[in-house]
Amino acid sequence: MAPAIPAAMERPHFIGIGGAGMSGIAKILAQRGAKVAGSDAKDSATAQSLRALGVTVHLGHAAEHLADDASAVVVSSAIRADNPELARAAELGIPVVHRSDALASLMDGLRAIAVAGTHGKTTTTSMLAVALTELGLDPSYAIGGDLAGPGTNALHGDGEVFVAEADESDRSFQKYDPEVAIVLNVELDHHANYASMDEIYESFEAFTAKIRPGGTLVVGEHAGARELARRVADHDGLRIVTVGETEDSDAHILKIVPNGMKSEVTVALDGVEHVFTVSVPGRHYAHNAAAALAAGARVGIDPADLARALTAYTGVGRRLQLKGEAKGVQVIDSYAHHPTEMTADLEAMRGAAGDARLLVVFQPHLFSRTQELGREMGDALALADASVVLDIYPAREDPIPGVTSELIIEAARKAGADVTPVHNKGAVPEIIEGMAGPGDLVLTMGAGDVTDLGPRILDHLSK
Image 1 (tube, rainbow, N blue to C red):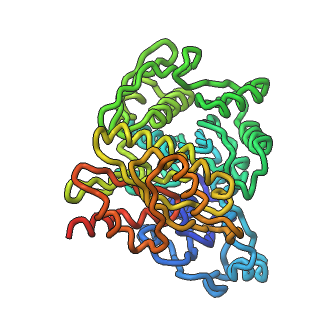
Image 2 (tube, one colour):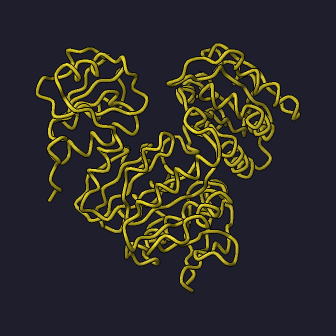
């Protein structure tokens, strides 16, 4: 039986309902019986999937899209103050709810696992959701990407576990009170909201302080995650479980054996070794799976069963997702947009490629991130045989004078990379056709609309 719907969520209106985070909450509410409506800038497969659940999706933003009887207007931090639907809500006296508060209300009464970290959140949340489903535990989940099997980013289940991706970008993850929290890594990112690592740590400490009494914090091997664990070690009743390849890790990763686009992983947990396959290449994905194993064990799931079930994970949209093959060229999509993520995915693909060439189509995401980390992005691109670099995808940001993709291109060339700047995204398929040959791997990379290029590259190669 579905948990009761909070009164404020009985007839919610979502501004930007097609977004990864917003759409997931809307789907779960619709599945629980709420009358959900919303608006988005353009039509999409996500909008269509929402309509299939009975959700009203308006295209464009206009005051008349907001029904007078809406119980609340749900927004993300990306919604600007001058949005006409937000202004209409103020006129009507309809309460405005941040998406994090809406998601927190969906977790009430359930055994929540919240997955946080600068990188790897979507993959680790997805691994848990798939494994728990495989075990017949019928979890609820809200993820920042579509699972390869079900093809959705969120689902209401009748089980007692709710798995959620916890976003640190705007501090909204501080609203959650999970039984188990995972922090995979802690790095400086989201420069528009955080000015220093001290601010980042303070935010993650506030997140961990909300873990329920007697709950567990699972931390990865990353230095930032271990530093966070040190800082919160004296929290009353908090159990800390470490994951990593070092011998003192509680979930000790004994072995990672690459096998093409997969890895075989061996993890020792509580003195018992568990062996399973991870269907994505790269050490970082093996670490994500080990964290999922440790977290699941802390909500009472048999680790042996969970290890077997993790093998059912076949990927999530945009996380080294194979889009197809044409004329012997494989096209793979990566959401990586921070230098650490870029390096990890490029190293993973370099290992999977063998003697084949690795070609990258990279679209920087956000002016602020490029300003702060452009040099490191350029260094990461040196791992590819050749790269195409597009203009910056602005998302929610306004341009910053002097900040362009040229910052990345200059750094990449200094690092010895073969880089081609391209200002017309539509020209990329033809450019890649001239660069790629049979056996090569093409990686479209970035958090913006570069993902749209994968199918277009394949179509062009097929002609």
